[in-house]
Structure formats: C-alpha cells, structure tokens
Image (cartoon, rainbow, N blue to C red; front, side, top):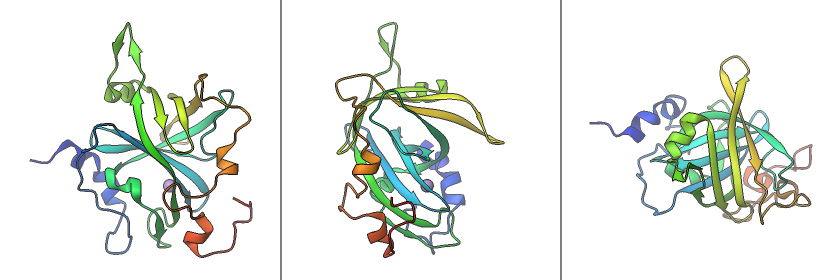
Length: 206
Ligand code: MN
C-alpha cells in the first residue's frame, strides 16, 4: 500500500527524468525529531529562492522570487510549488538544461523549525495550518532565525494561489539586515551559485 508521502510526490516525480537529472527520487521517511526547513537559491529561467518546510514526510514548497527578509515590514510573494522529497534538502548542483527546473541550485539556508500556531490555547498541527493557508513557525537556520508567517492571500496567475512570507516582530527581527544580499553563499558548502555553476557572476550581481 503506498504511503501518503509517496502519493504526495507524484507531481514531483512526473515532472522529472531521473536518468538525466541528479535530483533525488525521494524515498526517505521522516527521522529527525524536529522538522527541517531549507531555502534553496535556484537560478533557472529566473533567479528565485525555493522555501521548503517539512510537513509530514515531504517538503511543502514555495518559490519566493525575492527571497526571505529579516524585516517585519517586508512582505515577500511566495508561490506554491509541488511537494519535494525530504532528501531534496541537501541537493546542491546543476539540473541539466531542458530538464524541469534546469539551472543551478545551492542550499542557501537550512535548519530546523517549530510550529508556533495556536488557536484558543490549542496547538494547530502543521497539516491543518497548511490547509487553512496560515502557517506560523520559528526558524533555527544559519542565516534566518525567529518567527515567520506564510499566509495564503488570493490568486496568482491563472491557476496558482499567492502566499506571502513575512517576518514576525520578535527578538530576531532586524530591518537593517538583508541576508539575501549580504550572505549569498551556500549554508552547506560556502560555495556561491556561480562557483557551483562554474560560471561568471550573474548580470544582477547576485
Ligand atoms: Mn526552483
């Protein structure tokens, strides 16, 4: 009998040819006592940041064009994408041109998180918050720390729904910090996107 995580990865697998792309097929079940998050900087057709939160046995995913902010006054568009397997959190490398998502990926930040969402004194499970379109969580990453919210707001494009990623006002909020700009390197290997791609810096300097 297929596990729920397998069903949830159907879209992910259907978009990829694993004989051509180095990305993982996805077999791992949750083992860590705390859920993980990862933010991958991905230079495909355009540069964006893939924000992924472990909910159950998969990584729920959003593409954030401008990347996350440490400033509570800044709202960042987050467009939902297909669930990814847990082992994708360590994926860094080159997806061949012509393959889905073709381009270069680095792990920009990675760590654990915990759920902050409570209603009438009762914790709201992550799965439920996701269905409601409202997640509230505390990140423990190398670059990002503190409370963040992901809030579904309305329609985006023809089919998808728009979410917003917003830093909460807490001890880790800092409007003077812009980690996307000042800390461009991989949290796993210290390499930049250009080093992984073996290319010259991108025209926008990122
Ligand atoms: Mn991407």
